[in-house]
Image (cartoon, rainbow, N blue to C red):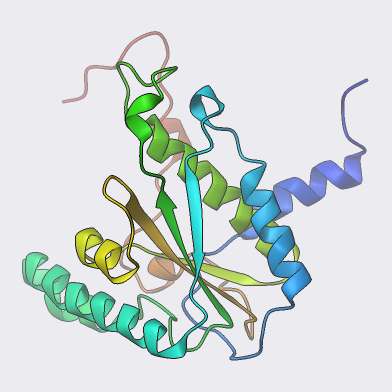
Amino acid sequence: MNRYPQADIDAVYRAIRERRDMRHFKPDPVDPDTLQRLLAAAHFAPSVGFMQPWRFIRIHDMDLRHRLHALVEEERIQTARALGEREEEFMKLKVEGLRECGEVLVAALMDGRERHVFGRRTLPEMDLASVACAIQNMWLAARAEGLGLGWVSIFDPAKLASLLAMPAGARPVAILCIGHVEAFYQKPMLEQENWARRQNLADLVYQDRWPDIE
């Protein structure tokens, strides 16, 4: 009785299967109504204690966008150095599309989160999990709309918070690049570039207890 029609079910699973973390964009603008639908999709996400901790900052000023890019580039170099023997390999990867995409949003955790105890007394990080759910909603909606979305996490959160005048306690979680693309990657880009491979699901699902793994 509660099951969707099969075509709708297929569409949901298709969006999940074909969603990609995009780094290559066309500069075409994103339709404002479409962007609003993506934000609404994010806002319909589940959240612990219904706290709705997500905040989104639309980066409209191009100079500000370039300053965000500079922060990402600074951390990209630090990340490469931390990778040791994979430094050179990492530096060849395209890790963001900040200067090319049609829209840039910064997803952040709100300030004053200590007031929310429901579901967070022993797991305070559930506020972050809630924001991740909102981003995933937006990601799937973007794929259904034919738009690419890339999650950039290579930045110093304190520097980004200062740049965007966030209040004490607020915390940036992601820079989201959204826009039109020539094509979606056939596989996740890092898999295409042989950086990593998708693990077997059977190896990640346990029953009753954590297995003894030698």
